[in-house]
Length: 127
Image (cartoon, rainbow, N blue to C red):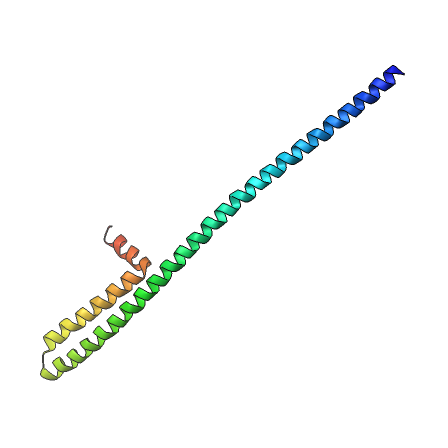
């Protein structure tokens, strides 16, 4: 009878230890998951701030681009007026220079506002 009692107590003790081990593992898993969730929340907050910063930067660039387009339109209009005046007065040499200037301005604008073109240009120049 003592042996049976001892075996029952041993089994109960092992069962209790097993339950405690399972509980400890569950708590460790929960703590790991809670830590991972916190890390992901921080990363999400960081990415949201970065997205907002990028959005603000993009808006600023769009505003600047619009302003430059307006300036270029005004310059083009003035150049066309001047070209008409020069053509009627027979000054084709100055008219040719104005056309070259117009092309330079157009090319500059396209390079400045299309970065892939600038990379191609600098690569072509050996830069």
